[in-house]
Image 1 (spheres, rainbow, N blue to C red):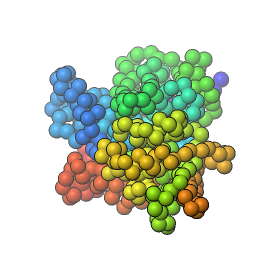
Image 2 (cartoon, one colour; image 1 turned 180 degrees about the vertical axis):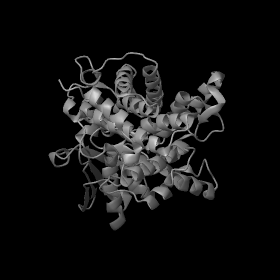
Image 3 (cartoon, rainbow, N blue to C red; image 1 turned 135 degrees about the horizontal axis):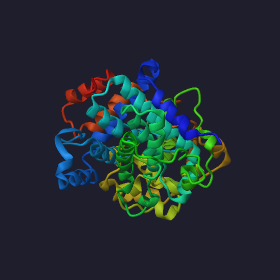
Image 4 (cartoon, one colour; image 1 turned 60 degrees about the vertical axis):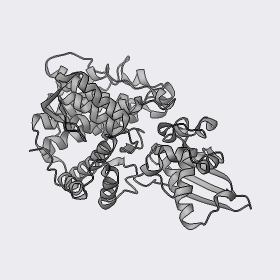
Length: 450
């Protein structure tokens, strides 16, 4: 049996930031700016406020000697700051995502890495290495898990794989040996959790998942540092992670390739599930070239990937009746309707007022979703999509997309990312120059890192 857990631990322990290429380091900064934006923007949400309120009930955790809680003046011990920052970062549903693993790596890796790096006064190179290691473990484990099979079992891949990725980043910052990192990953395997039940009733638990994973990662690494023993083959063993969380896992995906997995991460331009982005791109493209009378639309058809149907399209009757923002973020009918009506799919249209709009509701009833081999055959490497708008008079407008906006093959530029940062962060940091200063600090890696 190949000992993948130990091989990944060796990789994490030996990775040196000084040896990383300029393009990899730039990718870390690019994703860090995205992460800070969604964290600051998400800090105002009620779910984030509940996380902060937890710390007030445990005053010994909040201290002036602690680390940064983004969007707040309070500080906290690193593992608890990571919990709060992880909750905030996932609230807007705009954090980064990767195709093969179908999960959000940044929201589990960065809260742990930022908190520990600040506490330890880590060097930029150590921070780079920790982030790259965290992404590598998160994404390889996610690919090996087979996300569709994890969804079927009711597990959220970001949450369960993220606990291991956050552990990898934490272990690297703490300077653990390969053997200690193996122990840390083994410990984290018993901390990984995350139920898909958040899809019902507008629950906040999806937002908790990355915060808890980041908190668990720091804790697992610290336990390993003081000699706590975990299983050595936690990923591939008979009772290991891949067996527990998936019925169709493939451990061969745990083997590293020639490039770093962080280079294949996408950003999310729209405030909803990534599986909705491709069809939204198609509908926005149709809207940009056609003058469509919304009252004359007979049917809107969205081609979605089978791997995401259960998240955004099924059962269609429920997805056409959304009652809160969380449900809207996982409703293809809502995403299609709001995109056609407004030409947008960002934060400004995922609001309570738009949820109650009668035109949006009427359009949602005309949305149908389908899946085809032409789309699914390229998944998960490519998240292809299609959409069509059929009119009462028989006309039909159609569009396809191979790489949704934000994909590494169709990326947001630094300028587009900066504009998105300003939009997301403005409600929290009103002064534009202050926001611009934050952007420049990230681009130069001059936060609190020495």
